[in-house]
Structure formats: C-alpha cells, structure tokens
Length: 130
Image (cartoon, rainbow, N blue to C red):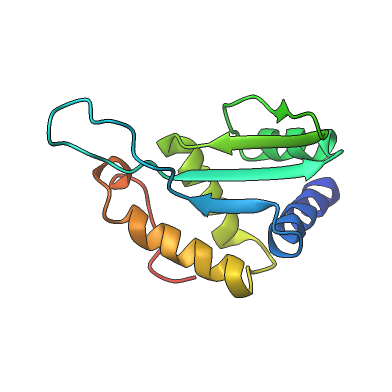
C-alpha cells in the first residue's frame, strides 16, 4: 500500500472511531413492494464538516457509487446502501490497520450480525470475526 493510501486509511478509520463521523445502521423499512414482504436495507454513512476532500477520497478509495452531498452547515457526507458498497465498506473495515473501538465497534458488530439475516446480502462475504 503506498503512503497516500495508507494515510487515507488511517484518517478514515480515525474519522469513524474518534469523531463518530461514520455510522452503520438500518433506516426504517419502506412500505413493502409486495404485500406482506418487508426487508431491511443496510446503510453506512460518513460525514465531515469542511471535509470535501476527505469524503471524496473515501468515495473513490472504497469505489462507492453515490455522490458526495453537502448541507447548510458545510458538512460533506456520503451514504451508501447498495450490496456492492456495503461489501466494500466491510472489506475496508476488516482490513484496516486500526480496529474500531467501544460503541462504534459494537454498532459495527450488530450491523454485520443483522446483515447475515437479510436475503439481499447473503451473497457477500460477511466475516464471522472482527
């Protein structure tokens, strides 16, 4: 891994761990497309105030599809929920040289535990250990 990529990995991991700028969650389910059928959608979101370069670099490094958005407080964010993007986030978190700690680690572990129960994510490699 070259120096620039390593720096990005460390900054991104610190962003998630220390600042709590990343979150793993399941938004409330949308009304079912088919009667009686409901399905959760996993989401990952990362944001940074005045962090356009960082968020765009994260988007590129993780090969995420959605565009970076900015709100009125100059907070840049990217939110993903596609199967491929979720898989890329999991691969990154598993291979990161710095591990998640405390509440963020618990949030991640509960997120991947729930992912295992959702049909949509059954084809991706969800790790059994972190």
